[in-house]
Image 1: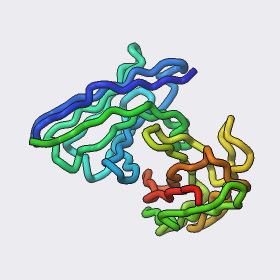
Image 2: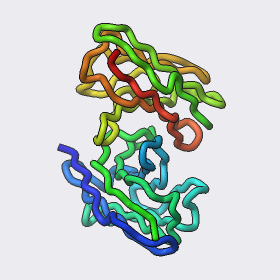
Image 3: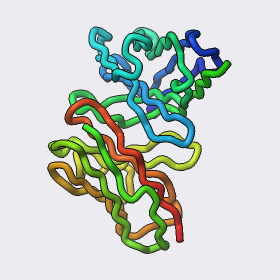
Image 4: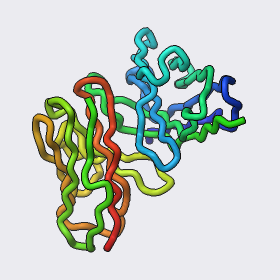
Length: 119
Length: 105
């Protein structure tokens, strides 16, 4: 059974940093692109970052480019999101999601972790 | 590519045939998926590549469309279908629609 379990969320002040983790199990992690998607309270979904199978290629929307860094450790079946210079508009539930290879839609999602940016 | 979903809120009765719309600002080339999100839960993949049903999803869900216009249809609404539905395009970048909230009348 595919499982994605996020951790590392919490309350952080504007301008500070936070690192999210996602532990994957039930599939061969190194064979899949992975991504982070967020959802602000009572809002829609926003793609945040994508990483290739080896980690050599990463993709970001303009809203987080230069502030967020996605990475992975295939030996640990883990995905990470380093978030720097956080803003109040980064407040959201962050989901770890698996991408179908070469198709780029998400087939499995974690339960999400809440990040609140507030002073 | 921006996606516009309509309506934003839909009220329907059990057994109704329900149609949700998703319109792209550019041609999506059928690289469109639909997700269902129940309150407090993660999104669940229903449909990918416009009309392919994800494993385990009931056959009352179906997708159609082409170009810029796509549709999710629920042939006979069930109480457990109450949720918000998001379309998602992966033809050019990765973007979600704003969602359609489906409630029971």
